[in-house]
Image (tube, rainbow, N blue to C red; front, side, top):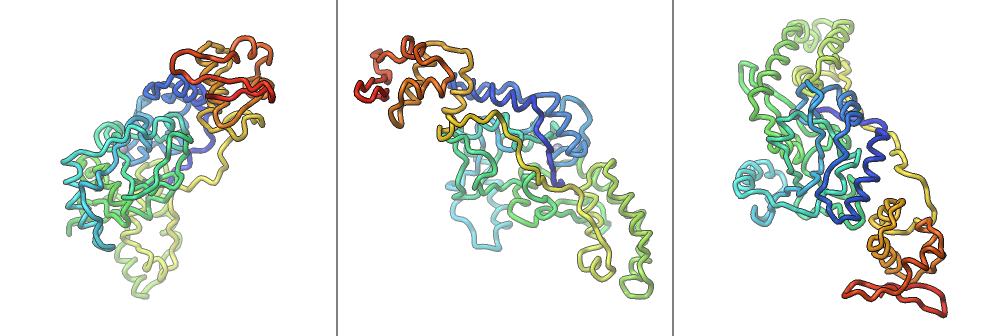
Length: 389
Ligand SMILES: [Zn+2]
């Protein structure tokens, strides 16, 4: 896995998000996840990911590869920390993890229906993944560290926030810092993923990076191909100071082994890093540039600025923006009540927020309601403002 810079968000997704999110908030049906599965999104992610799965680096081989939500769009499955018991002392985490993940998986993960439906159309939450990662391993799993704060639906919190996530987000962190690869047998075949951090460990386990025969075969073939091109005798001589290292040969090796067109760049980098570790590189003055880069681009504004909406809770702002030409009675009245809930507002104020004619609002919607237990609006005649009751 390497870092992924998604680039600018496709306009089509911006439109889809503003529509779908608003609909979900209005209808109260945040289980209707249409609109994110766009060809423009898939194409851009494929290109920006170098046509490899964001998680396992397998080649993207078709136009039907799933658009994957890092934070699951419906029912995030978190670790049942209570069931797992107290955390171990620092330094023994990985051993504890190996014993307990089996336990956690056996007993199922803890479903959290509150997260993360509002991120279904969020560009910063999307990757392209292979069907195996998407359907059989990652699924709805999104473990957070025990005690981590959580993004909340009430304010439509945006990632990454302060969540202490236990999966690697390749758009936020360099996966090479979390997972390395090494040959697991003396005959140098069987290259396996090795965790360098807690996130690395969880990612390897959740995605089954050491359990998938297809990946194993592919990785071993790539490693052998790179090793076949290494002149181990020359390297050894250089390390012992017998001969200087041949800079041209090193450049040629990098060009061949880390050619972006070949895919599996994260793994390829790790093979070179295994044979030429940081200490060796320092001694021989060799440079091993990391593939991929983190995004530094500022996020694009999602919609037009509307000063009169500043200060509204995000969920309410979406509803206001989504109302558009829909002036359906109950929808409008519920919205008016919610707009007057934190404090009273004048008809003029409401007209500006809703971009409606003030008289039209007064005549059609601002009459005090008294239906059942529904919240109502009261008019305060002295201040000419409405208040929710
Ligand atoms: Zn994959």
